[in-house]
Length: 363
Image (tube, rainbow, N blue to C red):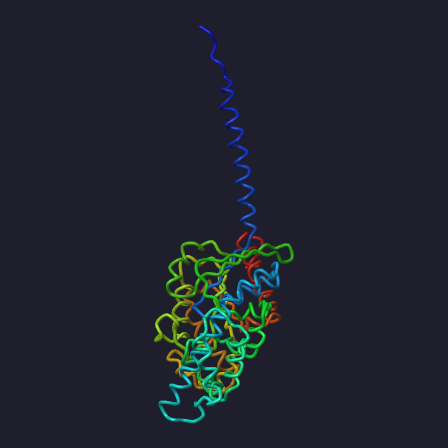
């Protein structure tokens, strides 16, 4: 009888070599993935999440190419036209209700009302641009604008109203500032990666509307940090989805759910109280006690520090874990300097927690 060979068949040896090589590649990929700090942007719709996301692209990423900016033109046109139509509708509605002349659109501007109401929703040419420009300068429209919290008009619509003539010029391409203020509802998940001082970050922006939220939790249990964004100025507005629920009430409910979720127990939690620029102006006319969740506030209703601190505390009180620290920041997502300063603090928080979890820092 012959002796059996101890060497594996040639084909098996080659297969084993390929498997080892593949395993080494997978291990390297895993190590690289572990080095990336994952940041998840969460919050209710209209909170300013996507504006923060775009600011990060502009500050730390590749910025906005001309093609990227041009891609926002259609949504900007549609938003501007729809918003002006809404203002015209409510101006006429307010006047019809009480016959208050401050809501009566000037007769000479009726032709511009016709132009705006009959134009195509995705095109602003010179004629439509002029109509929007003239209507925006009508006192009745400006008066109605003061009550925009009763409507579903984007907070940044006035940024575009004042440059309506520019929008109507042939060859208009949105500026970087226009892109930051453009409102496009996020659907699904958008990712952006960037490097700061040799530290890699991946930021994920997910849809804020109720219909999008079921996609959140199970996909992001391993994130380094949850950035929860709240529109601090939305205390007297209702949701786009149902037209009934107060936006601040919804934000508090959602924060409670996310902050105390089993999926994010090991994740840092940062609270962005966003749209501070709008908030400081709004509290001069509308008290935060208009919001059911803020009705117990007893301080100076027009004091920014007192009112903002009260809202911050309402959120922090929802944290049920003694082991979790929530880091609050008052922000204005359209202010690049403010975002850069705040994110530098967030970066330090994330890196410190990474070192602690690796056992390299004593807590």
